Length: 263
Image (cartoon, rainbow, N blue to C red):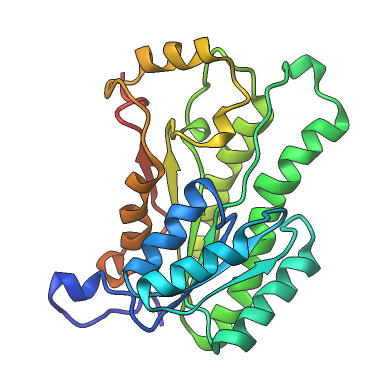
């Protein structure tokens, strides 16, 4: 059904995810970890999809016990179409359903555009764009069969502006492509699922640790809020996108950046 209309209900119930099953790629660290926790706090059962994490199983146990939900961890490489498809199929077997897919896995690098090797460029695109599509596609196959579902991409403010002083053309281009991909899919898949993006600004995660400390001070001077966000400050937006509270929203890109993209 095209953008299925839920009944009018108390707003607290509209945000409630009880009985839903959500999968989160990159769900064992950084933004993905807090998204996994936030969805569980809203009542959803959670499947954490990871590639190299050594703590994903432990995190799943912690989320399950803290929130009285089911939470399991699944190893998959999002750049391998068959790998992520297999993980999604196993989630269906273990949970009996899938309602929400958070496409969150991503990597970054700093390379001058004229110096990129084929492999350096391909590595970014493989994870950030191709992996994002394969993940959404695997979920959409389930959503189409069951007639409903929800895809939420983690994009970036880098999709709409050029960050300085870091040189990251591949990352910026990959995230711009994710935003456009989400728009395309939201139209193509409107009969059976919603598709939206969340674009964070500077968030205090380990992905920023590759940058010199002095760059952080430069970024602070460009952010009206004068600080980076903590990862937990994003989880409410993901719950909103995943819930009936956003039932008529598809193809949107929610920017959460402390005003960074405004001046």
